[in-house]
Length: 213
Image (tube, rainbow, N blue to C red; front, side):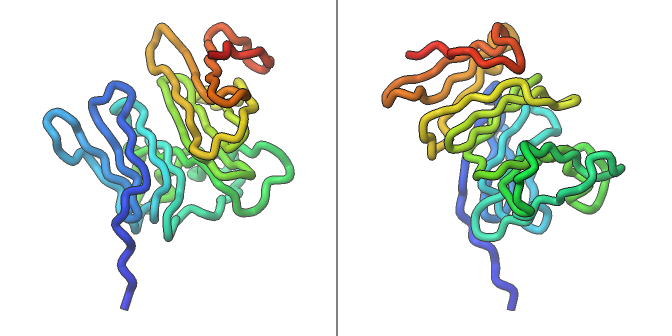
């Protein structure tokens, strides 16, 4: 007899304007509209396995997925050739990436295809667990225990910034979705402090000292 997956919720996130929220679950992903309250869409366990994190990009067809829970489907990174047609682009951080490592997968629900892997259009791979993901219309932020990466997104993604942090096991971080402000906030190196970075005034590829609160 096939064992049924667990039904626990592993994370909850509103989208950028709080008009929807998404649930990462042992059984997949559920997306709900807030007003009126109703299910807007879902990804079943057979499609994506158990999920650890999910992040929406406004009300678009793009989702950021991080496998987790008891039976993640995409726990092994594909390692595909980035130029292969029909396969997700893979962004590796270095030559020492192991064959299996945590990753952020970008799911395009508007993309046609019966196989769930055909819906995966982008893949960010890392050597350490991904603890949280934040998105805005032009950037994606990926949080590890001691480091935060900022990439341009979704077209032609490239790494813009990299910030070292103190131990941040909960992946605490937030990104302003406003068109006027590109503020990123995360725990400071000193216990009890916060670092605030204006991504619009920081030159990509350079290191600058964030404002500490």
